Structures are given as structure tokens and as C-alpha cells.
Length: 257
Image 1 (cartoon, one colour):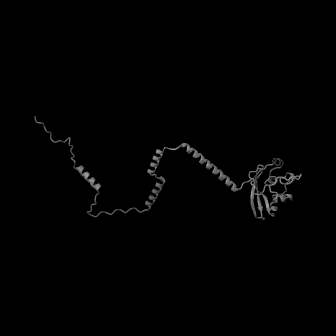
Image 2 (cartoon, helix red, strand yellow; image 1 turned 45 degrees about the vertical axis):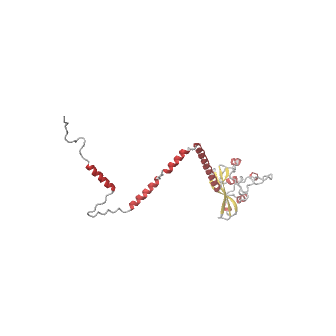
């Protein structure tokens, strides 16, 4: 892989310049840098942002660790992303994982313990020339959950304020409503339909009922009081005269003078 053009030492952050002044050093491990954005417009106007030069641009940012293996390759005039040399080294290194030239570049910081054993540490991305540190997944979940809790509490506060504006009902009407609700039997339509469905399924599974046995000869079934009352009422109605008492008065009687 071809070596990239090296920048002057005084333009690299963290290295001493020509006057011996120490540049900006990278932060201590564990410091949250997700709120930091780095952009060097002068470098972008001078060099094209492409696959072979993107690491030199990333090395200018405060996210770059000068003790990494890539910096050792740069000092040897070897391309800092040469995997054939990085796989033979151990320690902290940077790898270019995703590329969408010239807009997006994803760089992964990892710790190498062997040729095939690496442990991811952090992820950075360069979006249209601006360098960011990607947040960790736990921080993303915490931020989303906190935002959801905020909106839920705000909704409950708004609902409570609207309920307070409605006011209170009179004590008498409230007691009457509570009594009517207690006396009224609430019926769940879904529960009724479920019970009907169960009974219908059981009825379909049961065999049909056998016919009733015939009565023996000479046996008369007993009649109930209601049937007796109905028979006596029918008998009484039959004993009433069928002649109209007003029209049929028999032979007319003449008055004697």
C-alpha cells in the first residue's frame, strides 16, 4: 500500500512544533468526548478527503491516540492502515471499517492482542469533513429512556391539570350515582359470549337426549293446581248461558188496564 504524504510536524496536534511548544494532547481514557466535533477547513481545502488520506486528517483531531500502532507505521513511512503490518503488532490501533467516499468514513479503535484477537474499544465517524465520536449503546438506551420518561410525566401533568379544571360534583348527586352503580349489575358482553360459546360447544359434543318412555295402560298423569284452576275456569265458562239476557226475555207480557 502506498504511503501518504506526511504533514509538517507543527500541524499535528499533540506533537511539539518548531518552537518547542507542546500541542493539544488527547484526553485521558474514560473521558466522554461524544459532545466534541472536530473540523479543519484548511486541510479540507488543501487535500481531498478520500480513503488514502482520511487517516492523516483523523490524526489531526483530539480523538487520535499518539501511542497507537498506526503512528509507529507513519514514523516508518508506512501507510498507517496497512493490515499486513498491523496484524503483527500488539496494542491500540485504528481500522477503517466503513467507507462511503467522500461523505462518510467510519474508524474503529481497537486493542490487538494477536493476529486474530482484537477487542473493539470506540468508534469514530467522519461525516462531510466533521469528525465525531459515536456514543456507546448503553448511553443511547439511557438517553432514549430518559426522553420517554420525560414525555410520559409531562402527559400525566397535563392530564391532571385538565382534570382539576372540571371541578367536583355535588355530594348528593355523587352519593346517588354511587348507589345506583352499586345496585346496578354490570354485565360483561365478552364474558357472556364466551360462556355461550362454551355451552354451545359442550351441547354439540353431548349425544341427543333419549325419548321419554310411554305411560302404562290406564294411567292418568296427575294434574297440577294451575291445570285444575284452568279446567274449572273453562268449566265455569261453559255453564254460563249462551243466550243474551237482554234480548231474550221470553214472551212479552201485556199490561192489564
